[in-house]
Image 1 (cartoon, rainbow, N blue to C red):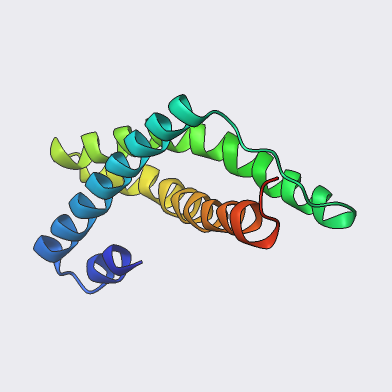
Image 2 (image 1 turned 180 degrees about the vertical axis):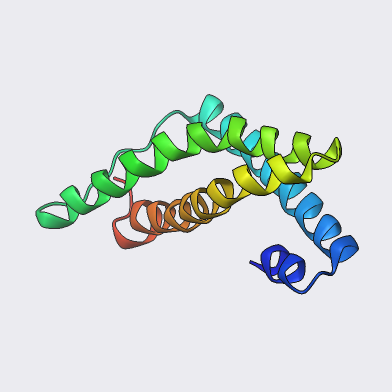
Length: 120
């Protein structure tokens, strides 16, 4: 959100730094997430009742959009780096809300899986 607010305020260098940092941190997170799950495998959700449906709905949408956001973010960054700002803005309007949704739902899935219902 900081990067969005910075570009809206025409603080271009700060926007570039912020978004570059967000992209780098997201890349490191994805690498660590994939490494962890390669080694540990999947963790079963132990919740019962209605919360189970809520969890799997959030997990399903999160997983699908997490797969979508990778190429979308790469194209968005690529267009910015090549100076194709007209095309960058058009795709960034889709990338931002999807990226935010994936980020927030990732935290929710983690919280539900590891804190709300501890794995057996």
